[in-house]
Structures are given as structure tokens and as C-alpha cells.
Length: 149
Image (cartoon, rainbow, N blue to C red; front, side, top):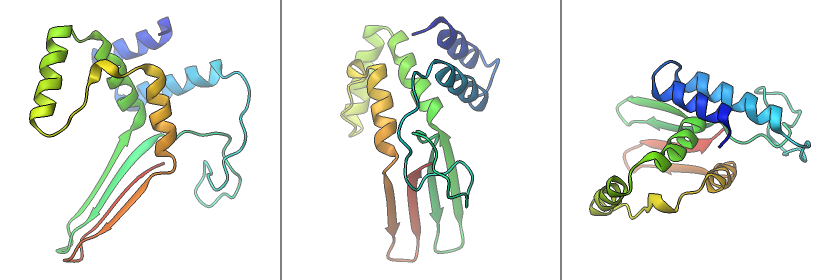
């Protein structure tokens, strides 16, 4: 991990900056270190309604939208930079604590081994989210939509 990235994550962990500011700084670092432009991504645009495609833009947010049958609405927008930063911070967790974390996750039905996460896997996961969209229509009229943008 670069010194600049570590500094940004440190500021986030210490509460000196918020997740949105950390995302902007990490994006700026990525832009500065990008080697060559990639092929355009059809159908994706930086501005809603703008037909111009964005050049290889990874999703920045995971959205969860819920419309309840009684008019309740939930709109959650999670910055993927926060997910990326959080997964990278798992490398700082002591092995004993990591074993306990994995054990607790397994007890609650989530068989995830955080020891196997690598930084390069995170970008691959975020790339895969680009095409993900989940729509659920409940029996009582509830609607759930999960997508990345």
C-alpha cells in the first residue's frame, strides 16, 4: 500500500475526515496513478441523462432501495471506497482476533474467511458489482432494489 493511501486511511480511522472525503482522496490518487485510458463502458455516464459513456468507471456506491407496502421508504447509499478501505484495514487485525471474527461470522451463518482477502480481490469484486442489479417484488407490494452506481 502506498504511503499516501495509508495516510488517507489513517485520517479516516482517526475521524479527521469522513468516508466521502476519503473516497474523493483515494479516487484522486487512482486518477493520478492511472497508466492508460481504458475502453469506454457502454451505457454508463457520469451525468444522469448524458449519453456520453464514462471511460472504465468503477461503481462508486452500493444502493439499497426499499419501498414498503405501507409507504415506508429506505434509501441506503454505501460508498464502495468505505468497503475497500474497511477490507484493507483487516490486515491490521491481529491473528487471534481475526480467528474470533471468522468464528463469530460462521456462527451467524456467514462463512467468510477474512484472512483470504487481498487488495487486488477488492477491485475485482467492485468491477463485478458494475453489472449487478437485484430487484425483488414482495407478495405484499414491497419492492427492494440493490445495485451499484
